[in-house]
Image 1 (tube, rainbow, N blue to C red):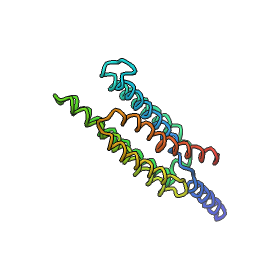
Image 2: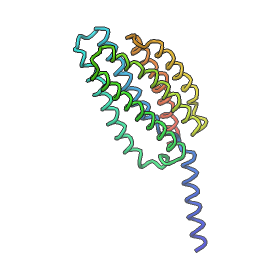
Image 3: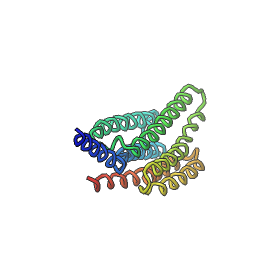
Length: 206
């Protein structure tokens, strides 16, 4: 009887140890959202610059379609990761909750600003949506730093500083069409690249 208990304790200890050392699984989400938002920003910039002649309402369609695709891909990825024991590790639970909170905040803010601009009888109200870029990069910086603390050694703190830099630059470009192009580059450097880094760590651990 005691032997069975010791074996069970050893098994549970092994599971806990694997969970503690589990690599962060959020890289796939960062790649999804980095790609989706970068593409949306580039399309927005192309339409604003007149390189493709489309009605202005296509700007809203662009964001609605791509953000919807991002949420769908995220849900699908979440279902796939349920079978991975590392999903329930402290590092992954902390990182996932921080990024989910940041994503929810940014989505609610964007929808609120869009609703306000659509209801306002003033073309200048749409300029308020330009604050989304610096606010987003500020949120990414906080989430990247929290993820670094939750699982030290992942090298994400440098990307948190890069994201903070883009927060400043995009804030200075509010009201300029160049902001969308710069923000797309910022997504590559502060979201897609760390996402690739995390994905590689997962592949090496398999």
